[in-house]
Image 1 (spheres, rainbow, N blue to C red):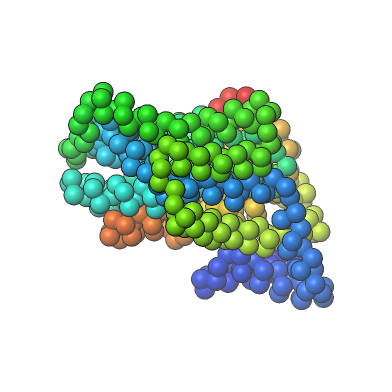
Image 2 (cartoon, one colour):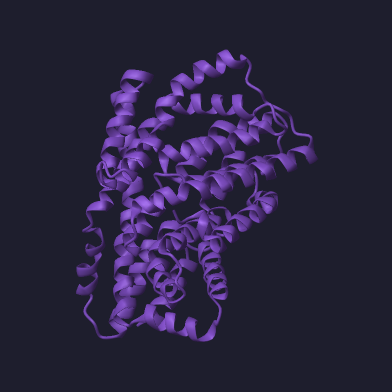
Length: 418
């Protein structure tokens, strides 16, 4: 069944069928050709959703949406300008710092790309940034959000691979900051070559003090999440609910911008994003059932261990496969499909599942700004009103940075294991 499933899946993807529907179509054809009833699909669709920690996904999305529909985005950009605006290419650096702070609230690269892109790309273009370069900065910096807690892809990996979400959240902080540092270095280098302007925010320390006081409650959310989880105060699901309550309290009593319309918009956005993620999760359950029934993970692990003699070669092979898959599949779908296979392979070489999880998320996030299915690439290029090819060319130095960070995470366990 597996070869038929793979062929039909990629054939449907080639004609622009959505990922989840391609998964279900491939599964249905494979079952019919093997003489098995389609009732298997109905049975397996709901099995992956019967997980209590999965409730954390919509609540974390809702908490981030409540924050970013209000005034927090404005304060966030102003703080970033006060911190790094005085450097060459200051507004480009603001995109990176903003994504670090935004990622600690939203956990979604797509939400980050849309919010930060609409706020900063038009301003960058007006100040003389080439539109493709502005789009490139936003495309790559928004992926920091999938590493800084709360991260939806890390939650999905933890559920599929049976790995502690707390450990994944804690382990994601340093790689996220490492990636941010690398991107900022690349922005500074390009800005010096192109003589891009500085963009300081006037007002000095007084302005910084007023802005930080307003933004601090929201910026403390990731610290609140990690601290609560790390010290065992609450489970990830409980923390996600507390995050929504925290966002409501901050919006009502600090920012005073929570309205019934804002709550409604946040709920609609959360429902749409959760629906898309859950449909992929449900569809992946049917594929995982076929792969497990045919012992594909065990067969693949045996093949790899017998043909690749050194652990570093196995890690390299895994990264190459993930880079290829990430260019054609959205990050959540790729995580759900690859995690069960790669965890089995990782065990054969003693690869820590937490390190593998960070490798996978960093690797597959590169696909978010890589054609032909780069979500943040398309969003940023659309906002900048520039072509995909031009943006991809401007992304070259950022690809080098991302690959360097990926190599460090892959071969230096201390960066992800605590």
